[in-house]
Image (cartoon, rainbow, N blue to C red; front, side, top):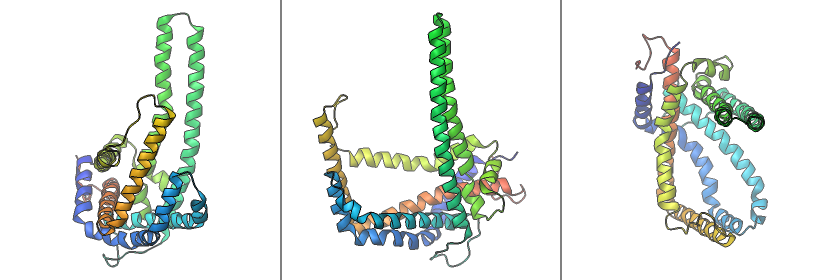
Length: 311
């Protein structure tokens, strides 16, 4: 059973995200332009829409609903296209100019299909998790109520907590195992059922995949927290622990006003905000996709030709 080299994979992911930044940007900019140009041209209508929705007026949203449906479907396809293009660079399968990329080949549609399948499976899985937790909780309450022994009741209560944690943990475990290697498996155009191959390749590597996720996603989660609490919510009148309806409404109104203000600033200084967002997205995709691709290569290739060294 092969192991993913954690340290080397993280190091390769960061080298890929920053060292091949221009190549990644070459893959992303055509798709991002197609997604951002309509929103930029319609910024006035979108700002009006945001203002109306704050006051619970959804008439403008209903009139723009066809646009949003088409826009978000196309955006979803373009996002998967970018991911496949970046994975092909990381897997050294990229062909064509480095400054332009627009390809809707079979791997893109396969990846979309697998993720749609995963969404359905995880919705069903989460429903089963909730039902299992409700059943376990109900049975444990019956057992605790039927015993007159305090120590036994406490023991059963502790066991019920452990049992309630099993379904969510199994759900999270399955999520990591199924998705971590899915993108490189599809981008490498493996002929097998990609979800099964991703699961099989990840056997015995759950904690390694989890640590790699933390190392690549963690910095962005920290930056987002700093942005939200350091800028977005800074100075807002937070309601007390048990707020009245008026206090809650005041906080919501202030938060909405701050959001509209920040969106206005973003549109006004688009020549700064858009390039910064593009750079951040490129690094984010480069880190996450690069880590998964290098882990895949380490698991698939022989030790003599593996691109990453073992821990």
